[in-house]
Length: 108
Image (cartoon, rainbow, N blue to C red; front, side, top):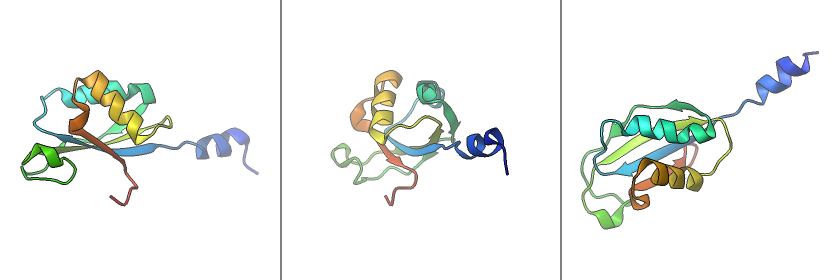
């Protein structure tokens, strides 16, 4: 039988994955700001920014043709997509209307 520390504590480590979609052009240091902001939830991983071509998207219907930047993040502490969205908007200095957050395992 495995020891408590070796089995239960190691197996209970869980990450919470989210996909951030940010409309508009981002400054070059925004990825570092996002990583610093998410330290409140013990950030584990932040992917490089992926930029989609400029087009109209259903995620941001009132913005017209816009560039969308995608960032995948993993955090260790439990949180919801709305908590992540609000925290990034408030502390990174972005408009909340420019940010959409979905769980990584979402069918969307």
